[in-house]
Amino acid sequence: MIPRLPRALRFPHPDTADAQGVVAWGNDLSLDRILLAYQSGIFPWPVEGCPLLWFSPDPRWVIEPTKAHLPRSLRKELRRGRYAVTADEDFEGVIRGCAAAARPGQDSTWITDEMVRAYVGLHRAGFAHSVEARLDGALVGGLYGISLGGAFFGESMFAREPDASKVAFATLLGQLVAWRFDFVDCQMKTEHLARFGAVAWRRAAFLDAVAATQRRGTRPG
Image (tube, helix red, strand yellow):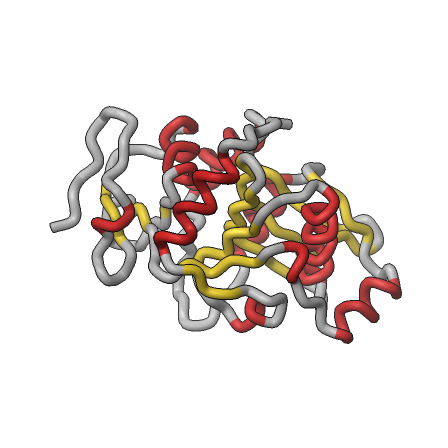
């Protein structure tokens, strides 16, 4: 049986997750609870018609920035410089762009208003970050996620113009290499991320990597 989260700030061990990766359900999206979840290898993922669910899938899909692969067509797009890329200039615009993006096989978004409020709060506290792709000044793509220690926990991305989100992500990967980040957590496999070199880690390996990278400390802001 999947347990309900207590009021106290603690999570069941991820190894107790069910076959779908659900670790627990319920409680809130407070800043401290979300940060503890990521530090524990867990993330919130609202599902329509269900109480708030907390996941730790096995395997976990990740990208090591130094091993990332940029397709030739994307490298060409980067050289063109069609998009201006910025960071943390419009976090709410990015998360709402992700919420509004159509997803194959999905009738609704998991980025609820409650999730938007929670992650905007994390951004203001210096833990959640966005990368924006702009065309003629207009926001046309981007991504957002959580930065803790030497790990970037990716959440979602969107594009209103061809390759806009890919350019944003490639730019982020380059910066993470410069900052010597250990990995990007992609959570689940998508063909889009597989083309960037995402690989599957067993949960035990992922949890060890999360623990190791958290010992480096986080620089909010």
